[in-house]
Length: 413
Image (cartoon, rainbow, N blue to C red; front, side, top):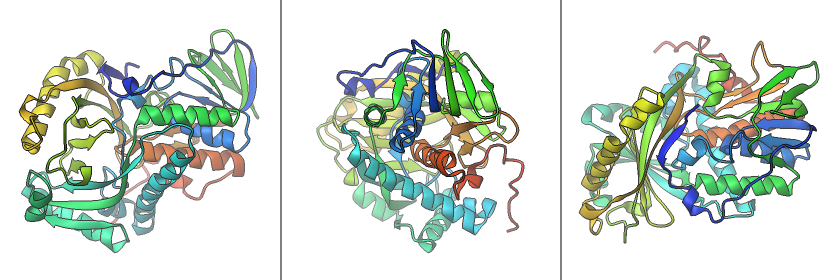
């Protein structure tokens, strides 16, 4: 599956890029993780830390898939509002989901503090603005829900926004408990953390086929067999093609990274920025003083169709940035340094898809951390699957089970 294209930003920030061996013999393990992106590496690191004999294989190179196209935004607010989650799933379930998202960010911060390399994790505030006046009522309702259930959020009117930023919007929610990270630096640091706990990582080792036994799964690369008690499929958006869960939706998204700027004039606290429109724009800053802006999603994952729009989408994103921040020094001459497009996944009901297949693939687990909070969802998935394998259960697993989409009916208003 062709996941990304264009000139990607994160890999040039890593010097040198680590490399890993190829499977050259038959192997056995407790857990085999398939996929060398952020989802697979989180699973591998957390499982190895618990003393499980864990192997991770990647068909290409580590972080060569959708991880390298991530913008590294970490927010507890989902693409689906808390108020909407409550309406769809009930108060207990919806509030629990948002609290899990918030806890995942705190857990990732604590994990980053233990990693061997700097993942460029930074706590950040978030500005979530109403894209138009018609969106203000739903934004107010969302703010009221957040406050009611203890989330650290403030409601801003247009004057409050314009006093902190060089643009004005009808209204916004300004919140804490968010963060940003370098997804590729985080991935390689997780890899080394895993290796330090006896995780074995192999690149250029594609899974060709597998067969399930009662207590094991036999997985085959081109020349060798890996016999595992459990297998975790963390192949990112390719996993959706394997499970064929009707809840999953794949689109294409676009992003650019600018040349460095001298200062972030009228950009309060370098807050992450996004909006109520769907699809939405999203903006953040970087450690080397660039600006990342993305969005303009298209309902296609055909590479030729996606890539044909990259230059135009990049120009639109740059012009949008210039209109929002006209006071950044020399903004009108600011140029694009990197521009890329990639597959982006979401779900119809707004929750990630995590766990066992209900009827096929015994002894296998699936990670489909789809949505704007993909990195937080991946950590949740790693924690859930770790507990499934070690303890046999996880208290929140049922919320994210596969093939649940036809079971969830909106509650009466």
